[in-house]
Image (tube, rainbow, N blue to C red; front, side):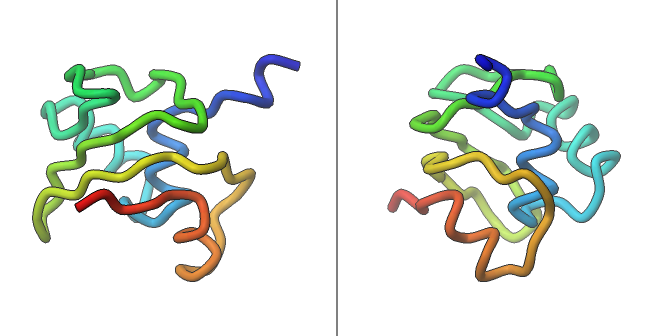
Length: 88
């Protein structure tokens, strides 16, 4: 039951459309382009929970987002945006 409250970082990045594929997400994470709750991570298998704050160094710029909920699959852009909130 606890597994329903967590999602792998790489899957979250793909499901919420920050990355096109898991291999792109893997590369972003391994290159140090992601922080979870201000802590750098190089683990694509890091577990995310609602309430976590991600700092993403994306090609289009840095984004800081709060995880609101965990998606079960990749959806359309409007659906994907419902799972996070951009912070300043």
